[in-house]
Image (cartoon, rainbow, N blue to C red; front, side):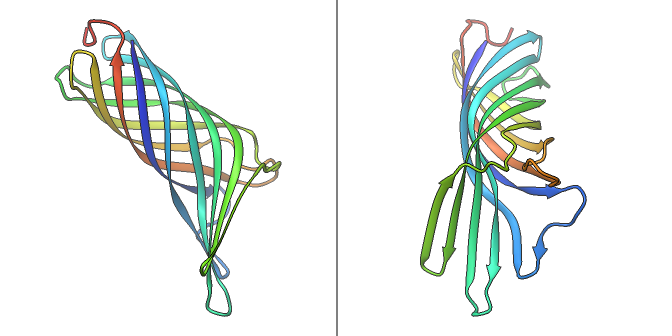
Length: 198
């Protein structure tokens, strides 16, 4: 078994199934960058096959730029904070020290709060609040590919690119908007058994 710590840099946004997003009137909608973190537990099922479960904090959202008639621009960053519990299967693709791997699984996410940052000129407003329209339970499909490397008999470091697509609409309404994110993960794993590469 292995215990892991990770930090993830995500670029996230919203996608819709039935309508185009991107430019609406005098506004431009685009993704935003977030920093997320967590821990995980990895259990070997068989050679080169691992089961991974974890828990972490995840912030996803989008950024909107609005152009006023007076020439002023308002930037509105909206974040949705979640407690995330991912479960994935990891396939290792080699036996050398530098090991490529592929992961896929589902992530269960519980809504915590929303955070709005609005910047108009030099005026900045920040607000934390609970949004009753947000569906508090979310499920996301996660896919990742990365490389791992042992740095000692007890420690391993890894680097991973991943993609997350939510399978449940963000709001509890007729909305067809879903969260998505892509990101880079950097982490380390501590072996809790003496033979990590058996």
